[in-house]
Image (cartoon, rainbow, N blue to C red; front, side, top):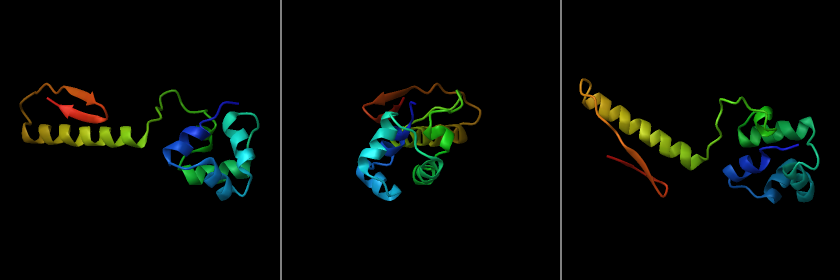
Length: 111
C-alpha cells in the first residue's frame, strides 16, 4: 500500500531512526511501512498522526482529490505572496493591477 509516510517525515526533517525511536520500534520496521511492504497498526498510525500533524487518511494517501500536499517552503512562499497581494489591494482599493508572480529558485518576485 502506497503511503505518504516518507513525505511527512521529510517535511518534518526527521530521520527514519528518530521516528522509529519515537514509536518504540526498530528502524527497519518503520522503513517497511514507508515502502508499503507492511501496514502499520492503528496505534502506530495514531502516534504518527500526532507527530506529523496529519490525519490518518492523509498518512495513508487517502486524501480528498481537492487537497494538495505542499512543503513548508511552498506554504511560506504562498503566505508571503498572499500578504503582498493584500497590501497592494489595501493601498489601491479602486485600481486594478496586474501582478506577475515568478518563482526564482525558491524566491518569489512580484512585478
